Length: 151
Image (cartoon, rainbow, N blue to C red; front, side):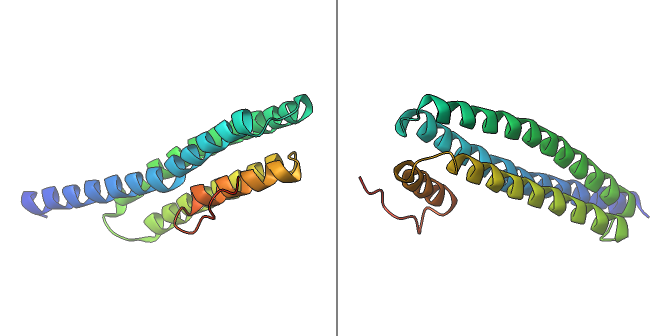
């Protein structure tokens, strides 16, 4: 392979890896944190939690924070595996396919565990608090169809 073709191939692989990393970062981590921030503010400022609710939610948040960190580390490892597979195969081969599948599995696990976390917190709330919580979650996940706040 000529030097020019090799350089072009390296540039294409680097661009693809950058796009994959950007996509993973924007779809997996940023939305969760934005939703988490909005929900955290709602839970701790707007819902007037009693002491028992506050203690239960804090425990739920601590358990999820530990699990989220583990999944984020697994996602970094999956991205590194994908980058290595792309560098090795220089194409869409079986190793790249396996690495992509693993990355998608970790993303899916993060989403599932985030939803379990949300439902666990919701279970602690009174019906009036849960209604506000539901509107905030809907607005964060799909602002274009979110129901307006009923006050």
